[in-house]
Amino acid sequence: MNTKYVFVVGFMLFAMFFGAGNLIFPPSIGHESGDHFWIGILGFVITGVGLPLIAVIAGAISKGGYDESLNHISKWFSVVFMVAIFLTIGPFFAIPRTATTAYELSVLPYLSGTSSLSLLIFSVLYFVIVFLIVLKPGYLVDTIGKALTPILLITIILLVVMGIVSYLGLTPNPTAGAFLEKNAFSVGFTEGYLTMDAIAALVFSLIVINAIRGLGFTDKKDLLNGTIKSALIAASLLGVIYVSLAWIGNRVALPGALPEGQNLGTYILTFVAEDVLGGFGVFILATIVFLACLTTCVGLIVAVAEYFNKLIPKLSYKAWAAIWTLVSLVLANQGLSTIIQGSVPVLMILYPIAMTVVALVIITYFVPSPKLSMQVPVYLISVVSILAVVYRSEYFGVAALEKLPLQVLESLPLFSTQFEWIPLLVIGYIIGYILGSKQEKIVYE
Image 1 (cartoon, helix red, strand yellow):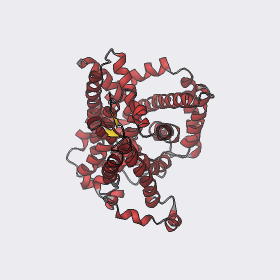
Image 2 (tube, helix red, strand yellow):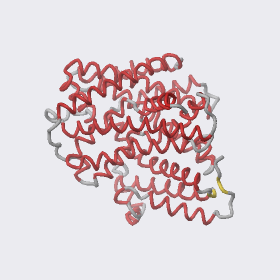
Image 3 (cartoon, rainbow, N blue to C red):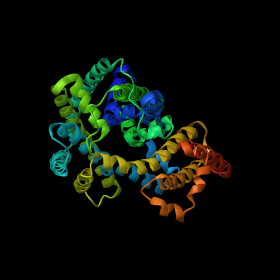
Image 4 (cartoon, rainbow, N blue to C red):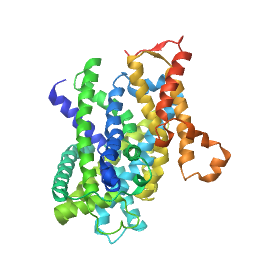
């Protein structure tokens, strides 16, 4: 696979991962990390860049992508897990987030303050436009997407360069938020979950494989090598942008307190755009982010509607598109901060499972293993992740802890850093391998 095609697929993968919503997390992490900036952003980059990179590459191991790999665990698990992923990166969280991010970066700078009515009016108009495009997505989305990705990238690079030049020499902001109470690496690592890129990679990997096949490369070695090179390009671009935006957030001095109801990341971006580029900079950023959010939203609704139409064909693609557009509209009116807060417990469950699946696919590729060696750790981590979220989350209150003896989770290795899934993965794999030693081994052809 020659260099030209590697860059074509690499930029395509970057465009899929780099939704405008991803812009808001690095600045807020940088702003709150203070003197712990480098260790915090390292954790974020691992989950926001490193894990998606590995997940995309691992997806190329099996000809059928993760659908085929997950079937080695069980067909019902494959369906349940993929449904959970599509709903998460679709109508429950990621799609509504595109609307609220577009609102906060494109509309809010021109209003005196946020309000439920202005968000409602904007989101209705936004999703009406989205649905009209979704009915015939191919040509328009492809055309706008190809034009917008380079423009968005150029705009962000301009903002980053001007921001770094303007704030060079300033000292870091005071440490705040979760960085005051927890390990900085752990905070950055779990904040990286909010990008949703590592779980989205389980879906995107098959798109990359099909794109490489479409270029005429069908040999397994070519597919794997092409995927690795393309993923490295996408990951490099994401990493540089995330670190740069986080650095700017770490140094910028905001004027006063955060306005009530506004997300910290969007507030930082809007302020920096105006501070370093003037009012025209805010306008350009607002326009590009709005269009980028719009095309990302359309792409996600198309993907989710097509998946559910394949899963339950009795309902047409248009019917599923209408359902998920309406659901997204309702959830978008909860506001960006509420959507992000609500996604945290779900992502805290899904991410350890997704990382376990990716690790097991890689392990079984190099070490042919029985099905039990995949089943035991996945089921074990699924249960523990759910219980850990119940134990850690304020959503469930003290009553849930009184009925379930969840304090025993504290005894798990690495539980305090939220990495308890790692030893469980190792132990579960070994137990499954021993118990299934007489089973037929999984071999990827």
